[in-house]
Image (tube, rainbow, N blue to C red; front, side):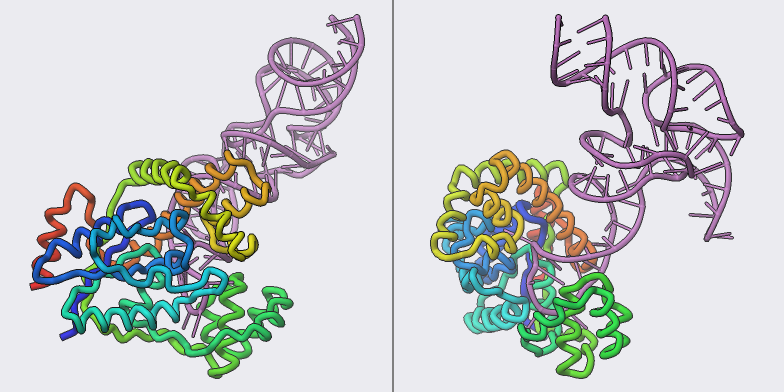
Length: 298
RNA sequence: GCGUCGGUCGUAUAGCGGCAAUUACACGAGACUGUAAAUCUCGCGACCAUUGGUCUCCGGGGGUUCGAGUCCCUCCCGACGCA
């Protein structure tokens, strides 16, 4: 029997963190510990802007994989998967219940389904060279190395083409993706209608501005995070970086962040709705959710 | 009142006689093998359809032309300049 875990998913601002804490505290027999699955909350110092849960909001529930990386360096799915598996093992050893909670679909898939990622380290030299090629050339290069991968890959997506070539160079080809799940997951998805979600996004944004999101970004920069790097972090940090460099106005800052977040939630939903295991729960139907969890844990 | 420039698909913009009409944003749908808040694809007048077809479109009205966002006349609206 595989160990049981709970997975809480949903778009940004839907209230995942609170729900995870609630679940962690609800079942006395199973003491819950939360593992965050968020590609930005892993970084130290990205707090308000990434919507990281505060100590107070944790209500004593242990949280893992927050603040485990230096924002100056690139964190990856592979690292996340490794750390996540370690954390889950530790939690299970204590006889506690792991609750994975986050909005980064790829991270969740990697960890929960234990997908086998090709063990090929990034090769900066090769990447630099390949970056000089035009996209058609990258594609034909991959076709030569691994025709079957070339068939499935998006021929316009340069970063993916480069990574595929990088792998094929070392392994001869890009291995077919395999998964060997280690856990028995129950997926809970937070189901909010888009109007309600937009409202929450708006209110939350204003709240975070008040809490000092701009100052946070400024501080990150004085501590050595380059504007360029901050821009690649996306959403709020991207526009905060532009704003602090005086490239956009305050109005543009707020408008851009808000509309980018809305777009991001759509991309998240595109990912999540593909996973038929997810039990979608609207906030009014929490009772049904809890009874589903209770019977799952039996 | 005179003069100049301009009014194009939600917004901004291209177009200078063969056009359902460029590009960007917004919007919608979707993909996802180590940057995943990233990266990328498709659609965006309507209706049918397999390639394709039919209709309606560029401020209003009229005209020239086989054919008009595109040229001419006129009217309406806006910006700027001169009064």
